View 1 (cartoon, rainbow, N blue to C red):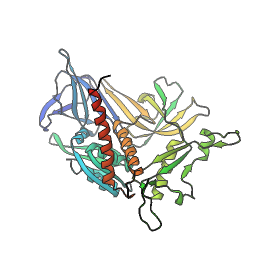
View 2: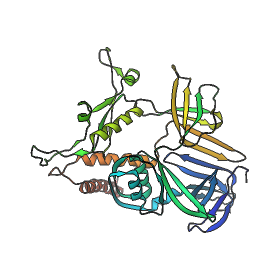
View 3: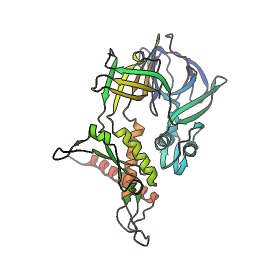
View 4: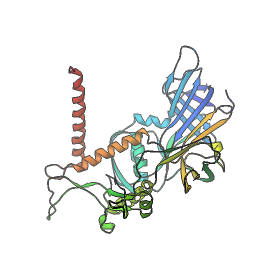
Length: 406
């Protein structure tokens, strides 16, 4: 076993100790903020699917679950393990209507069907969402997304085995440690990626769907309008950044003035104009800059090591004028062998699968809010049923094509 490779204590799925699982060659640990947390390595011993691997990372205990093994006829098998948070995929949340809840209340609600507790929950204000027929991991990620928090599993060990599993939800993981990245100066081991998302200098913000009513307050049939924030924003339903307009806007028809590039964001669970305005302003800060990430070896950073979530000063000398900004370590890949080699991604990452699913659910929720029943007052539960029924019917229709001749 290589000198820097951590010891892996090996347990079966019932937490019964098997022994040590010996690694052949290198072990790779990959982790992302609110996303991936995996181990990949080779071993001459073959763990079973569902076996648990416990290891000490500095002063922090980590637990991973074996989810896949590739077993050739000769030679070591390849093992792929995920954070033990993956067991939440097997816990089911039937329904949690989280209306005007604190993050602590929401976290407790989605963890209730599981064996995981709450180690710490930051004060992230009140918000709301509907979790309906979802696994607990999806629900946990949804809470982190809606309340703008970052999840970290906390594993406690006593008497040589895991004694408790809990969740820590912070506003931000990591810290400022004085680490600096200077791109463009003697840095061959760095890749800059400009992602494809558009840059907007102004954003319209929309909230939950609202039913039409007449002068007497009676519901009217037809489509629902979405909540806007003009009443608390000087009558304007968008927020804008004039400095960004100068940098990223475009000319009007006769090239006499620069105009805004407009985008929109929808927060289908928000029912208060002031909160909608605040969320849209926050979204505008991110929308006014191109999405850029830097992938770099930790050894090329100045100021020390960088951990997941840390804030890093970035100086991009390849731009004119040069970019000076702060960004976060959003992904870290460590290779344990004779020594530890680390490579980090600073800035932005592509959304993980659960984030893409959350975006899809938000789109379905927005569609639900745009649909009104005959009386203009379609209930949430009924509208969910209508949308799910329509999707199911469409899928069934696709399946029937397999019996047709082409």
